[in-house]
Structure formats: C-alpha cells, structure tokens
Image (cartoon, rainbow, N blue to C red; front, side, top):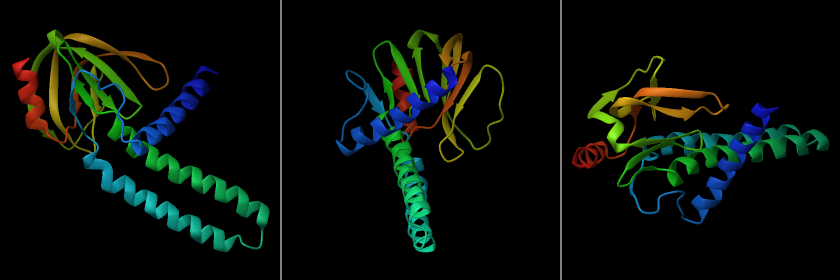
Length: 188
C-alpha cells in the first residue's frame, strides 16, 4: 500500500510541476544559485508529446463508431500527453540548486538529494555516455549522458522513488552548464 501511495504522490508532483511550469515558477530555489538540466531532454519529451497527440487523433478516428471505447481512450490519451508534458515541466521547475552550505541535486520529482558542501571530496567535468548500476553510485543522466561527477568524502543518504533508503559516494549528473557548476562548487 505504501508503494501505491508513493506512486500516486509522484504523479501528483508531476502534475503540480506542470502547473508551476505554466505559471513560470520554480520549486525550492529560493536563496540559491540554479543550474538547469532540462534543456537536454526538452526536444525528446516535447517530440514524444507531439507523437502522443497524433496517436490520440488516430485512435479517435478508429474508435468513432464505439463511443464508450472512444471516451475511455480519449481520457487515457489526454492523461498521457499531460504526463509527458509534466515530466518535462518537472525537470524545468526543479533544477539543481547550490546554496551556501549544500548542493541540492534533483531529477524531476523522482530524485532530490541534499549534499552538504563539506561532503564533496572532488568535483570534475566528465562527460559519460554509459552508466552501469553500481552500489553506492547515483547516476542521473539526461539523454543518456552525464556531465559532472561528484566524489563524496562521506556517504550521503537519499530515498528512492519507492521509499528505499540508500547511501551514495559518487553522484553523476547532467547540467546544461557543467563548467559553471564545477567552477561554483570549486569556489565553495
């Protein structure tokens, strides 16, 4: 039951992000320097939304003689289009945030990890295209690519989408302006 609750909460946050995006607002960025990551996924997600709209029109034409099925599919198709737009919006309105004492690394509504600046042992600009799962590592690729690697001097805890606590020692993330993020972290 907890898993279902977490997934419903996840969906609500995605749609909440869509509302923030329409209102041109951001979530949790007050008092910090913002580093976006959504530019790398924008064209893919918006293209997927366009394909979903085309699919909606095609299915509507095929089911025009079955009003009940047409209504159900229309609702599902509209939900899908809004969900895809919401996933993009979540990346736009929830960027990485650097404050005076921590870096808040985020990936839409799915990941939100607060890394104290004192826990960052090394930071470097590193473009990686492959990411194999390894215990103690958190990879947050956009378009299958990460551009910044953080090696932590001490493990940092975070909670997965389904509520499982984990600790990480290496965080790889994507930033639209990776050099600026690395410079800001090096100065801190």
